[in-house]
Length: 213
Image (cartoon, rainbow, N blue to C red; front, side, top):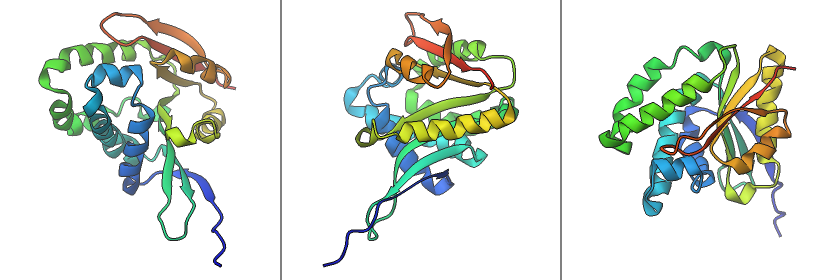
């Protein structure tokens, strides 16, 4: 009888080959998130649409930048590892370098969301930009785990890895969440709400900051 292989778990920097796995896990993690329900209202199409969105975010920007981490699990020697969680970060020095990424991915975004949605999306992104702190900071744009991995510490390990880097750099960490249920979770790690966006045109958004330590 062949013994069952031990489960191997690791947190590592994502490579471009991880784009499909990152898109898959995040589309499942955020399927019922208020922001994605607003962005993609059709319940039947949202999973596929959000997977394309995360592939654009990760593939054009976050992963090539080298600041996306994944939580990977390998349970069977006969199968490849599976991504169970991902965290997409932007370092302080990259805050002014996003325009080329936006321009390269813009045609894909237009095809995904449709031209009619562009004005309200741009206005919402402007609100987010205005809420970000002016001081140098790490930005956690996305943190998500597979539904089967919730409550197992996957998200915490990914979050702590990024916070450790920010602490080493001596800078704060900023994020937005559109789900009020997440506020308490982030507060446990030192974040506090610094602004709430309550425009009825958009999903309620909570801007949170963790001071440098």
